[in-house]
Length: 135
Image 1 (tube, rainbow, N blue to C red):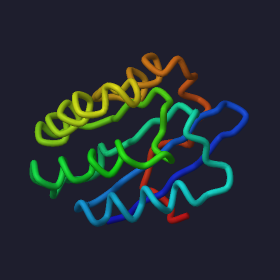
Image 2: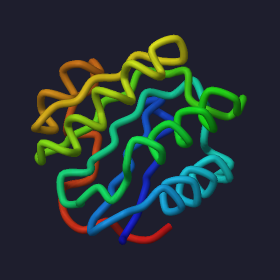
Image 3: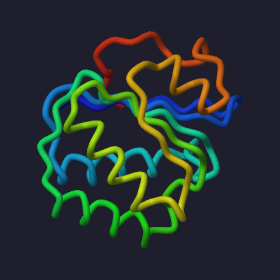
Image 4: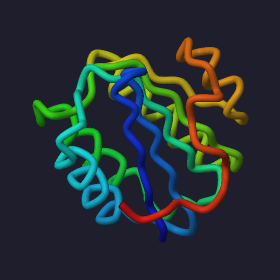
């Protein structure tokens, strides 16, 4: 799995990108890495691009992830969107949306442009698509 993120404080926005197969352990590790960045704010809007990845989590993993996120004060309260292209990733996103609805607004889209419209962000602020660079 590859993971990278960029934080754009001037736009109050975060871009995360995953490539390859990722597990629950990967998601927890990368989330903590994002939160450790001094530019991170739970108030920022975010876009999670998982369009180049495959999900290797089951429903128990998804429950564990959302339980972790609901309980941790560092979890984002900002509006988030995911870009996903496989049926399983989209389904996981919809389950996540339901579980996190009290924490933040979240939707799943098949393109970055659609996601950015939902987030009310100009797609030009985000780095071009491509493999994530490690942070």
